[in-house]
Amino acid sequence: MLSRRQFIKTGVIGGAVLLAVRAAYGPFSADPLIGEDRDYPYAILQGKERTMLAAIAPVMLAGALPQESDARQRAIVQVVRGVDTAIRGLPPAVQSEVGDLFALLVFPVTRRVLAGVAKPWLDATPTEIAAFLERWRTSSFVLLRTAYRALQELIMAAWYGNPEAWPRISYPGPPVVT
Image (cartoon, rainbow, N blue to C red; front, side, top):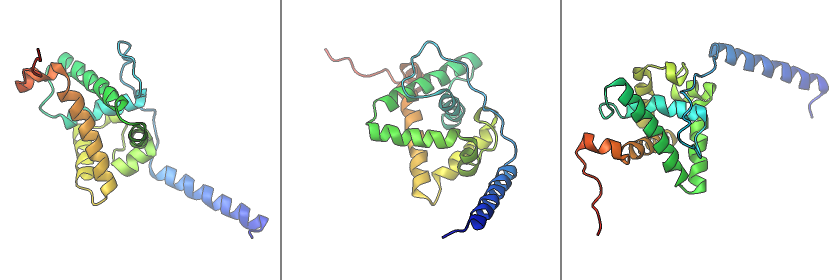
């Protein structure tokens, strides 16, 4: 049984350790958000999750997105919308797991520790994001490789399932059944 003195001492030491860890990871600033998308009723994704996906998708889809700035931004918005649609179609248990993954990626401490991305997603460079994706893709931890595959499958499905992407890959669309 802990005495009151031991309990207080443990609390003070624990607080000091937490403060030291917090100081080691530097200051945190609020993550900037992408502009509100009032034209689409998101069912699953929250603002920070949409921002994170908008930063990761162009790196994961390198070379597939349009190069012209306005068209590129529209394509990224379409990918984020597509991810929301894809997640909405998943079973509730899988939706929960994807939600847990996204929560880890948008929380600043776990973004730094697990993803190795110190800056907010929109401030991170494509090189930093690509390095994070490569670390997860080749990780010795099955959980990180699985998380990478989930991100990849959601983003790829969102982009290549979008009819606006089909001309870029010379896909005429699904056959018309009469």
